[in-house]
Image 1 (cartoon, helix red, strand yellow):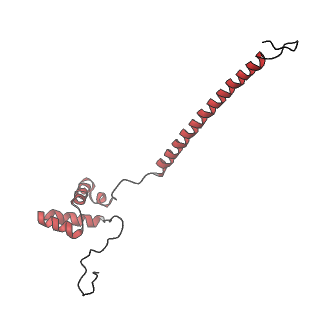
Image 2: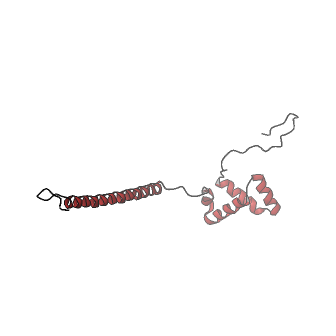
Image 3: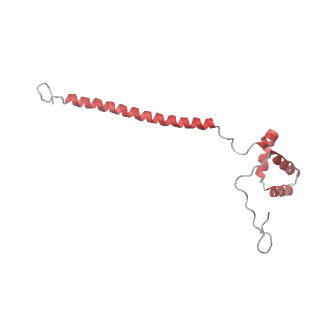
Length: 137
């Protein structure tokens, strides 16, 4: 639907596209590939402009078609979705690492407390009064 200006002339501005990436069906991809491969260089450029496509899409679609046929064309573009189990494993590994670090700190504190207790005991026995009520030092 083309908009018009005050003089009844079509507005030369290009209509805004919807946000987000375009999605193509496997049938559309197969049809465009079949048409693209029958055209000469000028015709290929015209097809790409008419459909609003890039030549890299044609290359990708052709590679997928050659690898796996129609099923490969129907596969969504991009990385495969992450497995929720992998996410859970990563979360658990991070928690394990944090808990191991906390345990190492606790062991260090206990070790220092033990040495401090032994040192305080040693000071207490060294400065303990003898039987006559006098310090040994």
